[in-house]
Length: 367
Image (cartoon, rainbow, N blue to C red; front, side):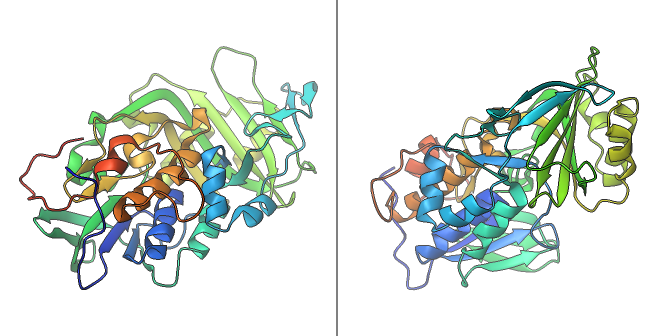
């Protein structure tokens, strides 16, 4: 297939993006900037709050700069000055001002920022032409030669030229187009929960890690966020139990499971667990990778964690999503940069061969 260029229609090319996270909002920004008509559908009633701190590294810093957000992102960085490791009685076992467990070197070029704050910043510059459909999702998706017919959860049907699934590790778009999740999700048998509590420890731009010292592979980490106003608390643990048992769909069941697993941890953990039922900011998931032979099928492509999640343990997921969004948007217009030298593509064949110029839904996809 020759390199794709933007289709020459009398109307703007329409693109539906599923997922208003970092990957989805970043892609919406670039496509709107290039003149596409963009709709973003998001299952949540608004931009999702909570989540872990994320790192912007390498090429992704250049992407953020080209979005005009580098100064604002820098102003929102967590700004941690170091970390401590404590035992069950709160005694400090070690301390460093050189690095943190979540963000790496304190004086490095990388930027650590809360995931929800980054998504909010990107959505703010996505463009006034971007349409958002919150509290909604894709129910069915049918490809035909000139587009994709989408039925939303509320039974409304619309046609789009292209559809991009940027809906995360448990992508609904991937399930509808490529098949069941178990074909692509590779758990690392580790689970992480995160929630918000008041900064009752009085920490100042600091991170504290507690490990019980047994063989249970459990840990608790607390770090200051939002100018020391609150703590973001994380509990991680390993398990070889079946994924279905360890990952219930009901958030209340998730909270109960986390409280049960961490019930005998000491230090400040009992106090953190007591706040679980009251906090509105809560996230729990398995640590996993998504492995696929290709990330697109006809007029549907996957972006970020939906197509190639590298797991939070790498610290690269956000940077991959930002860079891939930039490259994918450029591929839709036949360009790789708006100003300056092109950023090296990181999304491989997807960026160089998608979107299709003309393909029947029955035609085999290659990539």
